[in-house]
Length: 141
Length: 141
Image 1 (cartoon, rainbow over the protein chains, first blue to last red):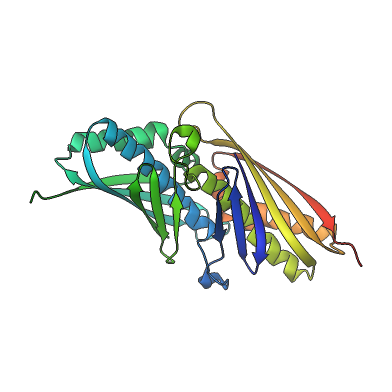
Image 2: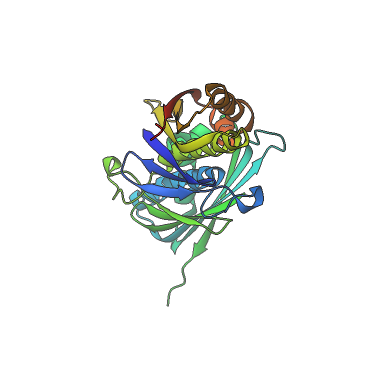
């Protein structure tokens, strides 16, 4: 895995990954930067939510669940002192669908959190990671 | 810090951060996904390169260095077995500028790596992080 991050100006950078995709990143307005894009610390939360979301959607599809939507809400808490690493990350999965089996959702999340999610496995060296889920039924018409 | 990741279709998700920015993420083509965007694991490399790059550019500016460019090249190695977390991350800083003092570059990188970079501090719970630098002079005309 390889990535290159190039300075544009201020605290704005363009990050390129080996797969040929690029994103803009910037410092936050709170820190005095222009705040034109996501911050590096925000990328970690998107990373863990995306990684877990991909696992869960894949497993639920294999389990023939009629999933209409999936949202992953990630909250991170950082240390007060520099370097202000993440100490706690909470992940909530909100699954929308028709006749979704709770046991399938529970198992999909467990498999992601305990076996497959490489971002979670990387971050949990520093941060305590907790997770929960909610199922929102889609009503029949 | 808060982020929400929403499923679009396939393995494609949109991640939104509290600061109001959004990015697309996707699984890699290698894994059978459409590969339309950066992967969650790539975001971690961009995150650490961006975080360190912002520190270094800030410190070099304070040290009155005439920086014309900064690239941060990040290489990550993952475990063979699931969950395939990052085990090693190497960060190379390439500083371009006029009359750049090597001591200033060395110190800026040390301060980022040892004191300020919150992404590095989060990732080093799992991954061994190494770093190096190269200075590329800009020739006078």
